[in-house]
Length: 368
Image (cartoon, helix red, strand yellow):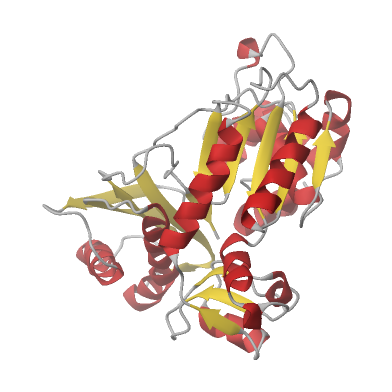
């Protein structure tokens, strides 16, 4: 999530046409496509071991509440018939490149977010197609014809609304939020549905009596900044349907990170170490997804009074395994014990990345 909101003085001079493409249950759908025995059955891509994490869940599994980033033991408890499949990241990468080639026939302005998700700016598209919805239809039809996989699309005049729109008609659908619809669409949206607002932040909004986009819009900018810091600026503008962030072609960031705000503040090493495990899982899963590796490990600690400290360590060679990432992360935490105050949030990130593939955005703000 951006740390600051858009600059209203930097508003585009023309109404942009932004498409957000999101493959439907991508990893799981690939496995079902390639293995007829998995079709129509609940499938989770990821590790089935006690410390495993679900990387992707089929729609059959989602009916039982199974979600990506969920611990495998929790997923199995929710869905006893769940079938775990080992990830095949090289296959997913190859399909992702195939899909990206389809995008490139329409626009060079492509911002990949992951292997299965991207923004496209089609304001001035290569095919000269006037309506973005028609471009999205063509892209989705090509993806289906060439990969036998489904994609959903959101079409709007900015990235924030395009992302919301792509979720609105999943799976295998698309939705348009026009400039005339934008403000009303955001007004009716529960804060927990906003992209970039996780459960802990949604709970904080609710505790302040703020439940919808309209409720956010009614707040002053100083009020939102007081309670949410720099993110308050972002919330102020998106509650008005305003987001001037450009689609950044071939965007490369330099870190992969995950963090989590706890329901209850922590003081002891053991529960903190336990809370770090899913964060380490997420960071390493994205390392495997992108093929990137990093040399600098950073631990972020936010205390109950919102003070923040970070501790980093760089190693000579890129971190080569999840076990190494865990060892280094826990060592950073152990070196700070005992901590002077209760902890409300922990985060882990990898930087000094060695990039395996240009054009993949590897700065991932993953809030759980």
